[in-house]
Length: 172
Image 1: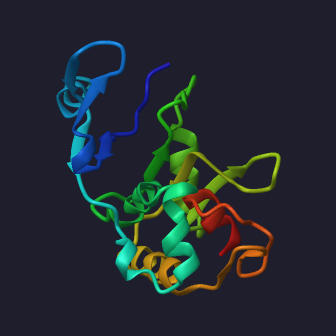
Image 2: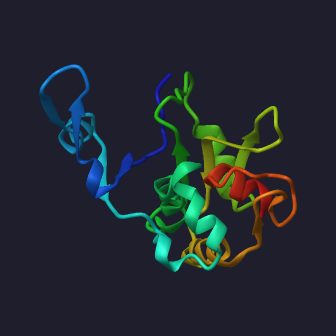
């Protein structure tokens, strides 16, 4: 079956990841060029939060050895306000059927996000449907920078101690 929804595929790429090395060869390839050949519009953006702007010392000092600050680049989907819906998927997610009915139902509803949860009751960011909003994007960035994170109890005391986007959205 074919899709009736008109969509644009974006790939958000960090400037330090535009070229990649082949680990077993002395060869570099242009990741942006490959993504463009596959039909993606490539957005080259830096991480939405800089380490030096994080108000919480523990989070600032440990995120790189945890999820990595670039994991937060997923949040840019919330700022793609030229579209009524953004579908954020991981590189290893495959839709085997058209998702038109999900998008149509989601657009007509009042929810700002639609997602499934994994076995740990965390947001499964393999596929997240969302209604972009600069207000929500800015709120998420501000919350990440200022919300309480404790090394033992996690985000806001909810026992979620991983620092990545999945855990942050699940805990806030």
